[in-house]
Image (cartoon, each protein chain N blue to C red):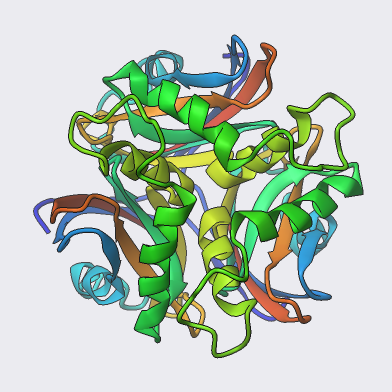
Length: 148
Length: 148
Length: 148
């Protein structure tokens, strides 16, 4: 244990954000989250940020922020993990429909990130990904809740 | 960013809930969560709801709330993702034992959901699933914590 | 619903913790988390603990705390789930590099656990795992945030 911060009587701030995906793929959205936060993190020595995606065919995850080939590998490998030729029953919207639902639950639709010294408390190599599991571009809505 | 709510000096409420599963499958429990919350969300413009499942062979996830074939597809596909004929060592309780543990960690045992305008801030198609990964029915305990 | 606790004007405490892994495997770290918390949970009837791992090639999950063969089964099965011989592009650091990133996102890098009656509100069989997905030992940093 190398650092302890204590806060009394914490506060909450909640807001909405929309991000447009360009079709199936993994998008680094750390900057967009930080921009949406604006100056809300100023003087916040310790806090907690919750990011929630209001969809069932996309997801949020944290992964490598530097080499874009990692995001390409995710995009390729997800097709092996949840193959679109599996005999799914739910295929109203095409063969990418049910695989997108399952990937969404495997990666999850919400993240909590600590706030430390006025910034997202991510590790050096961590970035926030919006994972679009549908083939076509979609408008994705998020709810962000800050405890501080 | 289309809406910002600020709360000072937030409060916490915590309670327990038990849900009976009917054996391996995916159960939509949004209504049971809302009933357990009772009138706790009244006048809560912004908040955060944490749902925790106290088990290692079941899980919680958020997915499609309308078409029950999605939940059937999850039930079928999880057997492909984590096959029960894999040579697991831990099989005290049968061939569904270790696969249930692994599925529990892949989907996760806790969820955070924003509260917005007095309701769960889910997207239009989002529902809360209790995922029972054991073949036989189980009584599942949850701890619900509301920040408001 | 069998128990309700209400807290007004909750507080926050945040601190850091480092855990050394001994290479690829699943490590039960419940005791290390409890030790790091020290007496912070004393008299905390209800709370929420957030644990965040600042890495993209390891993860945190909750699973069976008693039989070590479960953790061995996880270690073996993850190689089937995300095979290292898949043609990943990102392999700067060896064939265990990209599989580690993908496993990290499948299991996730953060957990929320309720605090109940002065202790972690885990189920009887639940323990906290640090999942090391890289072959070699690594020093892993965590940020712990307590709401109480």
